[in-house]
Length: 319
Image 1 (cartoon, rainbow, N blue to C red):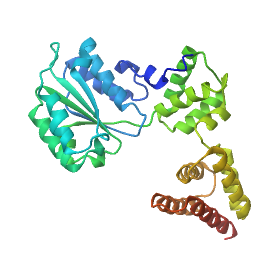
Image 2 (cartoon, rainbow, N blue to C red; image 1 turned 135 degrees about the vertical axis):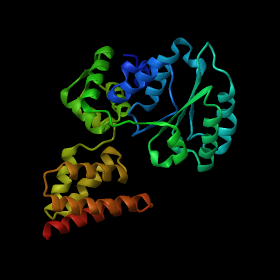
Image 3 (cartoon, rainbow, N blue to C red; image 1 turned 180 degrees about the vertical axis):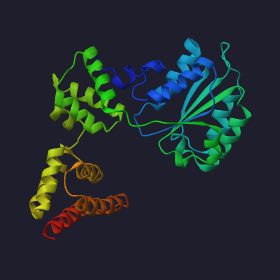
Image 4 (cartoon, one colour; image 1 turned 90 degrees about the vertical axis):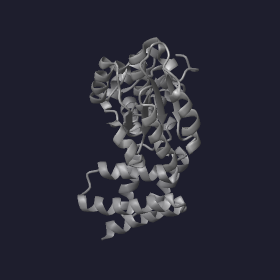
C-alpha cells in the first residue's frame, strides 16, 4: 500500500465506463460521445457523487490523448466575481481548439458560488463562443443558477451513489491495495458516507493507515462519527425521563469523538428517522430538532441547545 498516494485521485474514473452509480447519466453521455458533439451541460447533485469525475471522463472519451489541450477546469468558489468571466473564461473560450478537436470544454466547478452578475456575464459568453467552446457547469444547488443559464444547458441530476455500487468499488480497492476489511467495517463506511463516494474512499484510506484490519470501530474513529447504538442509547435514556444521564452521555460522546453541535444534530436526525418509534413522536422530535439546527446555524451555544433538545425529549416521555 502506497500511503503517500491519495486514493480518491488514484481511483478517479478515466472513462465513462468507470463511473460508478450514475448509470442513466452515463448512458446519455455516451450518446453524445458517439456523435462527437455535446451541448452545454449543467451537473447538479450532492458532493462526492462523481460530477467532476464524470466531466473529465467525458472529455477523455471525446478527445483521447489530446484532452488536456482542449479542457480547462475552474473552481468558481475561488474567484466568484464577474472578472473571472471577463478574463480567464473569455480568454480560453476565444482561442481555437487544438489537435483537430471540434471544440474546447470549460468545466466550471461549484458554479452556484458565482455572483448574479458573474452568471449574467457567463450567459452572454456561452452564446458568443458556442461554436468553439462548450461549458459544463457543476453545482450542489441548481436553484442558485439563474434561469437563463439553466435553459441553455442540458441538466444532469446526480443522485447519491447507491450502497451496492460503493460496496463493490471499495472491495476492488481493498483487493488492489492489500487491505483487509471486515463486513461491519464496510457497513460503517456506508453509514458515514451517506452516498458520498469521495468520503467513503477517504474513510477507507484513513482507517487502513492506522491498523492492519479495517473494522467498524476504526471507521467511526477516523471519521469522528458516533456509532448509531450510542445515539440510540442517548435518545432512549432521555425518552425514559433521565435528562441528566442523557446529557452526560452526550457530553462524553462529543468529547470522545470531537463532534460539533451540527454533527450531533445531523446524526440525531438520521437516528430518529431510522428508529421504530411511533410516527407522532417522530414528528415532535424532528420538529424540535429542526428548530435547534436553525439556532446553531445562527450562532447559538451548541451545548445549551443540545441540552435543551434532550430536556424537550425528556418532557415528551412524561406526557
